[in-house]
Image (cartoon, rainbow, N blue to C red):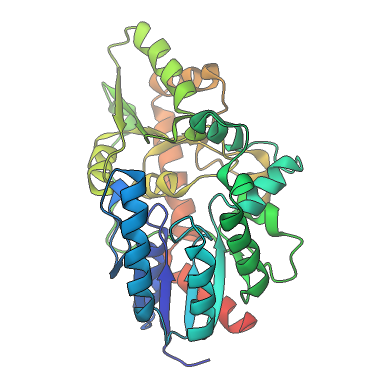
Length: 365
């Protein structure tokens, strides 16, 4: 494999590929980002696939045109890493474009970091003990996910899974659906930009008011557990504690979201995952105390002795108890904050993660 790689990172979720691009560029590789900005989050990209309209049909129509024009720029790469089989507009266009990408580039890899056909199949096969699947169905008001009813999506997923060089899971949760595939690579954890990120160094034990923040996402309320979190926040609010300030936003662009996080001491991420997600990791790096996924399987998998975040469930009492406990015992915040940042520094540095991707690409190409 060439020493300097020309890499296309196709798609974007929660700044995942922007962080990976940072690490790859630090290793002197050439990287092009092609995505739709992950909608309102408006992440950086070199090739823009955003449809530009809030109207679903107009947005899809514009995206099809943009995607078919942009595909001419998506060739001649040594490596193409696709974040999800749903990168392109959810119509028959999907499979056509993926076939062109496979034909016009070197090695193509698929990330497993979000919902897809096999993620839903694993759920139906009862392979998850804790997951956001049911919440997703509540958000959509349907009995089945679009991955289960839309043949264009499932066909694209099956095609990529069986024709890519390897499937690279981003966490334990996303390894579960693909662990029996021969081309399923070992987990490579989510990349987080470490360089230049300084923690908000404060002595939490001296805080007079504890700022607790939850950033909801329109259309993903139950997926993230926001209804449960809102019930918990209302219960805390009714306690009328002067030493707790609750902050709640909805669907902020990523840069604004980071500004709010900087003012918070505690972030309530989501209730339905067994491990920390991208937003949780970004906050942990800043020294924030996160309430989210920290199940025993996560602790055991990473051989952790101290919890880098506080585990919560889809029951409001677990969240209320955690908030009150932190407000009553603020000295705990310093220890958890330190442990959280240390965990991210050790396990998620985007440059180290980028090297793991390069090693994986070389191994499977």
